Length: 93
Image (cartoon, rainbow, N blue to C red; front, side):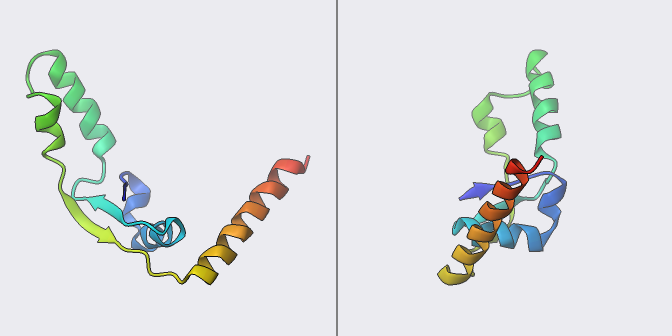
């Protein structure tokens, strides 16, 4: 299972594609900007405003889980295409 956050996590299409390509569930949180929330939490820890890390981790709530739905043949074809595109990008000057 992969937990995601940030702006791209708002795209259901992108999250479903990631779940399909990884062949693993993708969990999107209720609060998608968890990076900013984590930074604020760490700042609050510095002044003893927030509880321990376990308490902070327990506050994470899933909004939606994306389950893999792509068949293996399609997944493999798309994965090969991606690897090919990356290879061509890295070898061209």
